[in-house]
Length: 221
Image 1 (tube, rainbow, N blue to C red):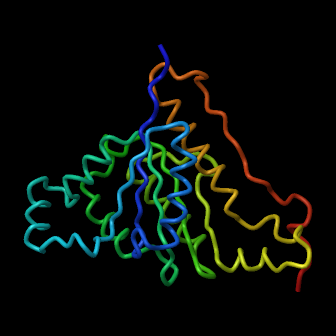
Image 2: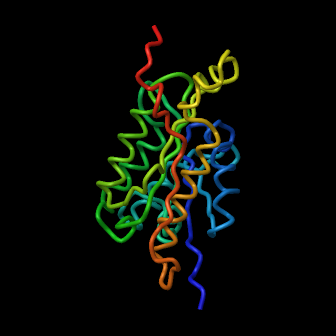
């Protein structure tokens, strides 16, 4: 009997919601992951046409006692792994992601998170994204998630511009680029796959992105 496909949750934690750069990355990630998993998406930012009153939102939270909405709690419960996307704001993640993490605090170490693989994609304008990525991965581990290898990356506008205008393309080979999203998605899918009963092969088949092993110490100033 073939193993069940993993169920992956794509959590859009960008302030811009479905209209931002992070949303574009998550759309591309969904296409990659849909080949190997059932994929569900959830956007944290409120939709302009779907405002919920403060009282209604508060009542929903009080009913379940965790701070997470019933819809979000159900989506997290269904997931066997998740991919979180956020932008970068003054060296930190979005305010909607911060609120989500605060609301999720009572669920730390529970089945909702425990052992589930988590990947992260961060969009940034120029700087600060790597710090966001590393700190968010640390928070996810503390909640109870596992972090697959090479399952987080930062896509920078500055890096994309540098790559597009570099006189020697080889000088930008070590920059994170859109192609690295394939590695992130593959490793997340593999980590989720091996958690399913009857998974074959039983061990994950990891992939890596290109690494500069020659010029990383080159003088460039």
